[in-house]
Length: 78
Image (cartoon, rainbow, N blue to C red):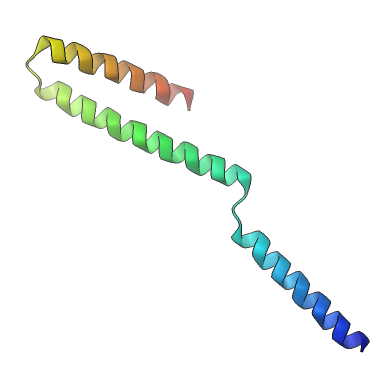
């Protein structure tokens, strides 16, 4: 009887450990969100730079430069 209880306890401990490992930690969730935001901002920045290279309109250029400045500020915050 005691042996049966021990094995149940061990099984329970193993299952608890598996559940703990399968759940991401809060820190890693935050890090993942930061990484995704950074990737998104960097992708947008690359797009703006590409458009800046090809635009001929001064008005559009100023708009793109403002967008680039904003993206750089957001990237600096991360």
